[in-house]
Length: 182
Ligand SMILES: [Zn+2]
Image (cartoon, rainbow, N blue to C red; front, side):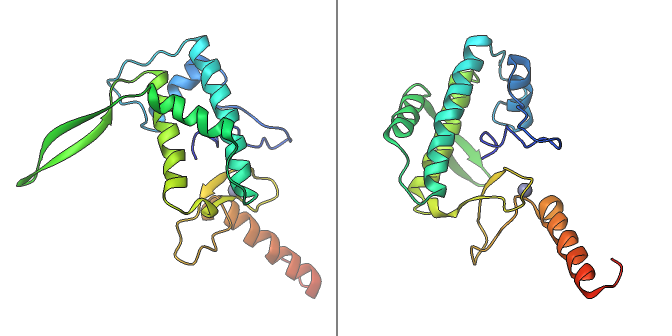
């Protein structure tokens, strides 16, 4: 979802874009941990364009899920194309007193970054809970999130930001109605 949330609403209206330049894409990918600190990752203009195209296709898929529909075939084939180009490597690693078979993507390139994003989106479908995809209910917010709460009633992208903004707003509205100062 972080990937789809790279176009935040701006205070003055409209949408910003956190990955609209190759350097910005590089910074974003490292900040999210999708690209490790030691992985080579210097996306060029073409990789950035490919990234933005993929984001647009995934967003169409997300919009379909939000509307209770299956994602369009174009989204599914774009996901499969990215997965096919991002080989996963299995590595045997020691874990405590035992062993673990860890899976990781081969190298840190834009192709692999998009492969990871594609896999995350695919997991949302595979988990059987695509209905848990939500758009934040705050009017000024456009963030998407996966509702992992037990009762499935989460409404805000974040309680700290939008949840509190909403609480403050309804408090002011109540105060206005009862005629007492907020
Ligand atoms: Zn929000």
